[in-house]
Image (cartoon, rainbow, N blue to C red; front, side, top):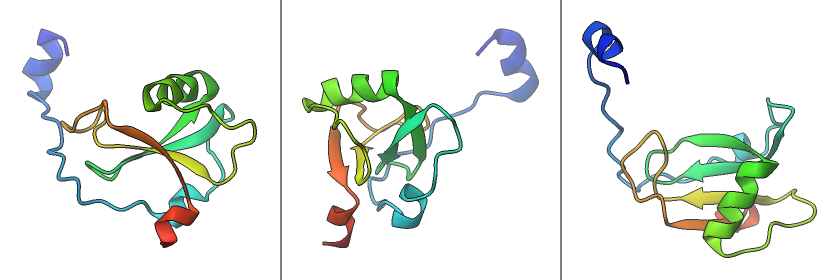
Length: 102
């Protein structure tokens, strides 16, 4: 953040990642708002959900040590921290919506 913005708006702190959040199946099943979205990213640290384009999805797949599925229908990425919170960003998994129900 620039000095001017900080002077005008103050310092913005990241959300403290509690890690207590569970993915919302309804939100993960909605159509993407962005035309570039191909998969969701859910942060269990703060509960945020993001749409990822193919380029970002490939980065998350590499970090999770998985191959991105050819067809994505039931999958989403889950992380412990994101740009909105202070949780660890290196803990990433590829999960399925069915796993939420179990």
